[in-house]
Image 1 (cartoon, helix red, strand yellow):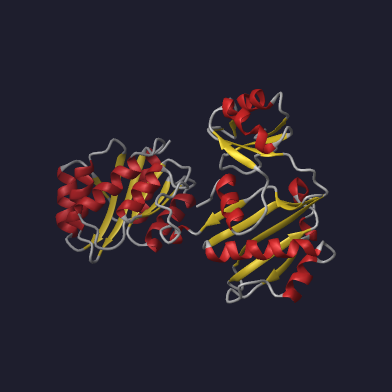
Image 2 (spheres, rainbow, N blue to C red):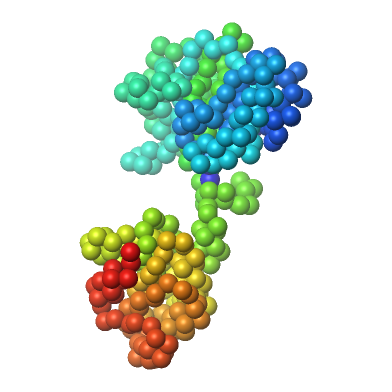
Length: 357
């Protein structure tokens, strides 16, 4: 789950990483109350979970006279379609130089990779080739001095303690990504001017996070029922049992130049209630016009699947391909209620293509 900037900065501050003085506001008028703390020159940052926030108009500068009006302007905006509900008001730093530092898991070595560049902020996009990278053993609490020297190059050594603290945040908060862009030097010292922290979804409970905000309402519903579920942008809903079979259904839809709306694996041994919830979940997607249910009955009984489809009672057309345990009983039940059950996955997908817009 991706934390918002103010949440990441709270954690960074707890680990001794200097952050600008600031406060979270939820109404424009609240800005005035924090000016004594932040000083006259401030920066206001929309707290929205989107990339490229600054270029999209989500970061504004103000002084003591214009802070409230500027906050009102920011609250009235939508940043890449997301309304602004919270704003972080911070002191404006007198920046000498901007750097970039990021820590993520290196997929090839399966160890933390620390990235550093001498140019931060928006400049990192044009300086990607100058990024230095070191791999650190996850068994180490700190980045070894020889690796830190390689990472910093000619950058000030005063950055090293801050980068080590960021590495501890990455380890102890079960992070997938811990990033500061820019990490800045000022006459007063080093500061994390921005902050990004993504926590591993599998570790949310350990980190005391009860709700994964990154999930949509349907994704939360799928998680509640234990479905493997991914939303896509098509019009053909897909339900299968087993990741391989479900992916094969998606591949076949793509082969016939269709567009799948989702991936949903109900798992093995799905009963009537579980299938019913799966069908209703997929049918709730606004663009879905037809649903392909492709199941192999081993420990999953085809008659239970049929009962679940019938109980769901959804508006989109449901086309079924089932084979295996109690197949004949399932076919009879579906036929009695007007559902199409076809012999092969290919036939089911082609039938869905005829219905899909």
